[in-house]
Image 1 (cartoon, one colour):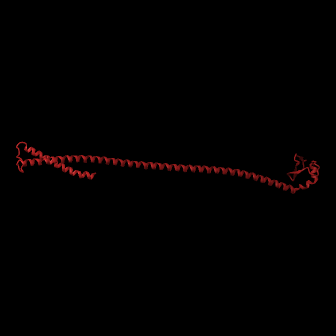
Image 2 (cartoon, helix red, strand yellow):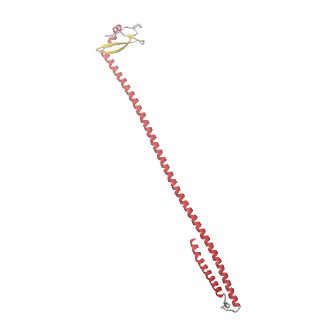
Image 3 (cartoon, rainbow, N blue to C red):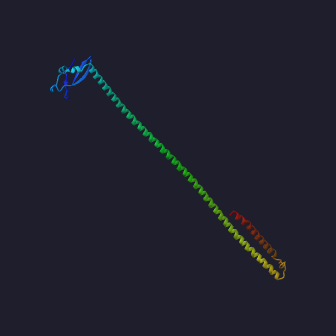
Length: 232
């Protein structure tokens, strides 16, 4: 069963041909150099010798080529879809890598900041301990300075007391010597002037007490002077 061919604007005709239950679309050029520019109908086209070229083998070849082209087109579509999916997976992987890189950089930065804070705290603790030690040393120096000042003042006071005691002792010795010399000039001899009944014992006891006090002060002062010097 054959239908009449219909011409289109591109001078091609599409003729459905039934052959063994298979429908094959064939195209042929209807305007040739020997037609005088006239369009041929289907019967004239078949009668002109074109039917000999459209045999069964040719139809099978065209059919095979068409199926191959369809398979190639389907394969290209599948490849394109696979490329799109692959590109999407690659982009997703790139995003994951970037996120992982950002997280790693964040962890590294946090670790550096944590170690830096620990270093600052350690330095602060060391500085605090150093300042505390310096303050303690300064306080010890101040305490030693105050102690030295106190000992120095005590030594000065003791020196003054010693000087005063020495001066009193010299005065007493001088007075006693003068009394002895004065008694010798009047002929009293070594025993001195005659003792008086009234007040003689009190005067002698007062003089002996003064002499013993002066000697004890001198001895005590001489004993304290080396001790103060050793402490200083």
